[in-house]
Length: 279
Image (cartoon, rainbow, N blue to C red; front, side):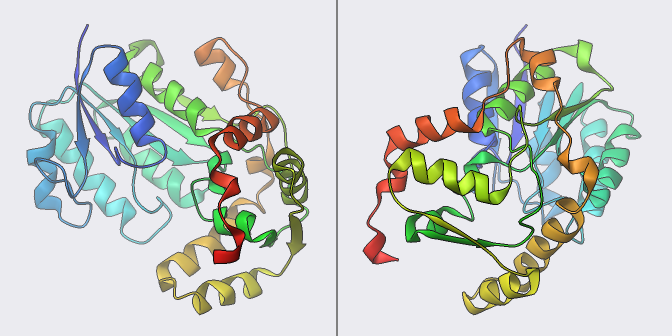
């Protein structure tokens, strides 16, 4: 059965992959973004109804993170409008080990909508498409929490899971936790990338305070500085966030992508071979 599906954050890491997967399966997809038609803007609730009008289902990604102030109010309003517009189901991307995110999950669960929660660990692609790419290119990755063991998850796995649960009602009312197949420290991650790319990349453990000061010096907004501090202190410091889940296999019938396989695929793209001298 074909569905009309709104993908909020449809240009982001998971979103554009979900759009691709849904279209491959013959669904009609609308990308929810400020540049979309109609436009969708989390900071402007008047855009919610026009974007949701005529949709059967929606994939919800809150930018930059469900932990930030204002997220709960936005999710509450969005689900209210979605119910009013007659949506059959929503899927919320949430963060593994985030208490604030879990409050947003509760809002979705109690909204009156059919739903599935997809709770994700830290993304592999943070090192190739996100915050830590420049560090990899520069050959030195300075990050806090060296003792944290993280089951990094591949965004392609997240997108495949979202595509399945969004269109398969047997997952209604469930929380699916997506992680990689094993836990790794930042040092192990950097060493794996270094070996894969054939270039010396060093991991340097630093304090959370030093990391935040570096973000401020780089001119990043205070909201981002706060968010990363939160993610390191509250999420990576939470033992629950360091547990490996088998839900990827449960939903997709295959193993979750191993970090080494992610590295091999990323090396082939050449993204880690950009000129280091420009850094």
